[in-house]
Image 1 (tube, rainbow, N blue to C red):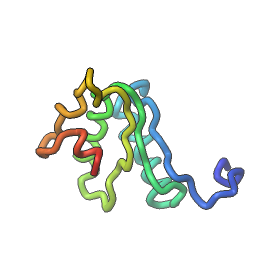
Image 2 (image 1 turned 180 degrees about the vertical axis):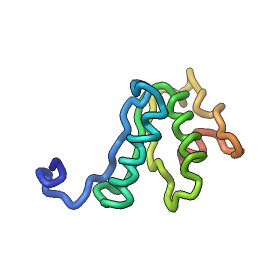
Image 3 (image 1 turned 135 degrees about the vertical axis):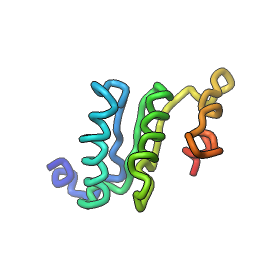
Length: 112
């Protein structure tokens, strides 16, 4: 309905906002993320999927688990990952995280 009101052919980005407030990550992987994928891949309602939030650990868990649960996805699950204050002079925690089975850092993965 919102798409019709906006009179647009599609939405540029749909964000999973603050996933740390979900009751648990299983709910996101059982219901929310498959619905988002369907909106993007099947219905073509949006061009990109993203995730926003501050806790880097939660985003890291979701990105890592997405790689494990959707290994044969034709396109990357996440096109964007927005967080703040984790790659500054005072906090470089974004650089120190890696994914299981990959050599690249979280920051390098997000840049690709």
